[in-house]
Image (cartoon, rainbow over all chains, first blue to last red; front, side):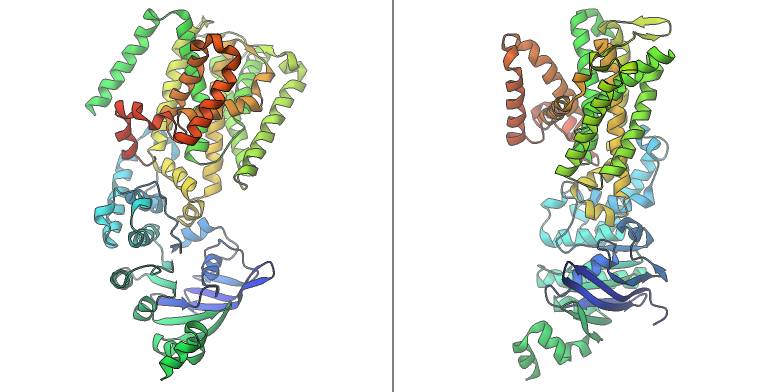
Length: 262
Length: 317
């Protein structure tokens, strides 16, 4: 518990009178793939937005590598090594796929404004290296052939993978995925699974997924936390959580609870 | 590469030949187009690229014109040094204004920049001792290397290279990580922040750049017109610059040139319509917003010049 990589402690987020996240705590171990699941409106995205600095927290703390990050700006948090994708994809639609990834790489292939103005020494080398790295990241998520296509023109499944490539470009230590499997076909979910498992195996990346597509969450997660109405109602290994009656009831509904119980 | 060299040589040759073939009046108009294009280029950066609507451009133009003229009359600083110095100071003001106002967006930002414009205009009118108040002030002649450049045909040799240089710089920036960053911010501020871009700083810098370009354009326009009248720097003029940018194409530096050329040449072609000019411009603006939101630069012309391929090759659209 003490060496938690990401530690969310008693975080509360309110919107007016609505408590979107109620005294929520979560520990993410380094090198693990964890998931937070819950029905729509349970507060999953709110939690993600609170971690990444998009929403201010109304109580509690968020620690990343023992450093407080709540109250910091989203770009500072990104620079500390937390990257994310967005539920409704927030790609730079008019830019090509490779340029989208290059925005993520920006900090790692940088040169100053004067060099940018004059295309001075280092400009060309830096741009070429960044483009090559972006191509590699696209290949990693299976988009090698789509580099030149405008992000908005890509099919939905590919947009999701592009979001992952772009997030990886920032060189995160922790990757947060907001419903990466929503709207994907079964085969696409499977290839996404493989990508996530590879990322952990090859790069030691820690991944926190929020989703309600069981096929993804159950297959890859070491630990699952279940949210309902802003509160954590269960936590544990996928099998334990899958069988927990309160989870089945809250998350899949009464009928499913009966069906699975039978 | 060969094409680029060829285009450069052709451009330089045209630059030196033009004065021998064109009448004084036409050179004056070319200068007017170039200086206006610089002002509009500022809008291309802040509005077209970074996506922040600015109605402060005429204020930057006014500050550039007045600032350099005052430095020349009061302190004897020559315009060739005064204009860039003023532009630098104006860009600092633009940066601060950006830091203050860019936390808001959309309509509210437009209103805030409009308010800034109104304040600047009032300040110009009410600072009688140095600006001449509502009556305005004359602009001292542009002197460089002991030469006095009092006419359009002479200012041509200053205005055109300065414009070309600044356009080149903006073009380069657009093709760099900074252009990519601004373009990303325009398309999704949330995602740009999540990628680690300091959005506020980017936007404030874009504002500073628009201030710099506006002030340089303003200084050059002032030395062309030789007289500053505070009525020229109101909200109407800001809207005019925005209209030029929209008709030319907000997303491309070439749009600034095309738009300026149209708005300066049309009054000439429509001499008998003088009183309906406002209507013509309004219709142009409306037509473009509805039918061609990307302006003339997005139509065939740029494709003929082979610019379309350059555009897609870079990091912006």
